[in-house]
Length: 348
Image (cartoon, rainbow, N blue to C red):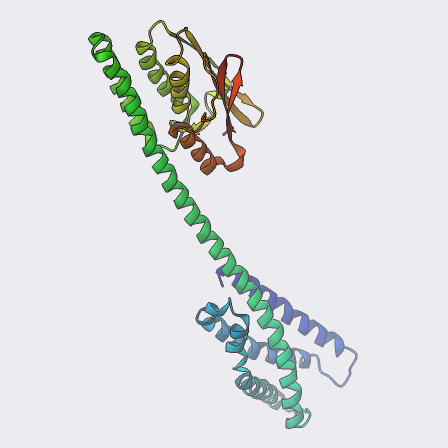
């Protein structure tokens, strides 16, 4: 058992013996043939010997706790000591009583020794069963709590490993998309391609710094998103317009690092690249009660059967599940002649 369980056990033990002393004193208060100190001696001697055996049991408990999953073996390992307990307890208790009575010049009178051994053995069996049941309950609870803490630590480490893997997947995915964007301009406009490479270097530098953290403020996340948007606007100059509508009270909210980038990538991939008409992309964020709500809308596209199955969106959903569980949601909706990505996470 842990420290807390041992404290609880010895707390109950102390209360039990205090109650036994009080009951003994009360039972003998009107008996003029009993001196005031005798009830204290009777219960005190029993308490001393019983406490010695409890301390011995506590010292050996770690050796026997491996049997907690098999209660009958756990109890058997302890009950096998009952005959030894009977003899040492009875001899010790009655030896103390006889000794104290002798020091006061009196004689301690009791039933015959066979009757004493029978009576005390029955009482000790019931007493041992009661306290072993309490000890088993406390030990089982402590063992369950320890296993639960170990499981939670394991789950946390597993979640952190999964998050690290998901973040590692995002970076090459984004890089390949950005390089493809630059590659498409290399033979058409070298000057624009050079500008894009410079901005890509800035974006990669900022992304690497941000990726060292699992969470970041929405303000910092939007700075990365703006760098990415500048690269894409350079590629699709005159073909896309971005609108940012972010509430001031939303900027300090904590969001998973690099969470929004795949959503904006999708808006360019499925909206801008596939449309012959100019495309408008709206990015909005607001605090709504206990949640932070973010939306990215683009016109000129529609949802298909495979919408939301790409690596970027799948990655986002898995990260949200690991970090927030059921408290977060990411949905794609058809809105007018475009698609709306709606993200909701707890505001922290």
